[in-house]
Length: 130
Image 1 (cartoon, rainbow, N blue to C red):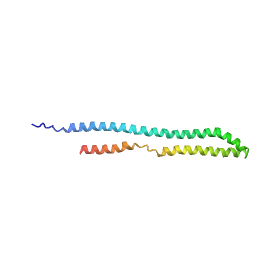
Image 2 (tube, rainbow, N blue to C red):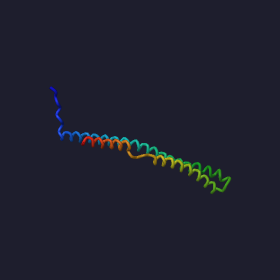
Image 3 (cartoon, rainbow, N blue to C red):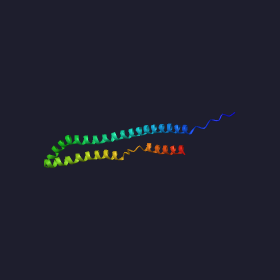
């Protein structure tokens, strides 16, 4: 004698679907949290480049500017020496700041992996209801 398993009721099927969808949503939220955490970590590093660029430019402005102005002042008028040194130090700071900004612009903040799995989940849910 073969034991046949009774077909689940419509209510049971919807309850199972509801439970599976709840689990799926929780997993997607966890995935999005993890993915965004990684992206924010990389952005923190890039912001560090901006801060480092600013600090280097400022330190250069304070230390190198004074020494180079005094050195150049022996060859050209003091105001021209200060202008030349200021432009060079400012250019170095600008390059560092641009590097940090370029890295931040390249960073894709959208949780791509989560979006892809959500599309798969929607397709799965449609299959379950048809």
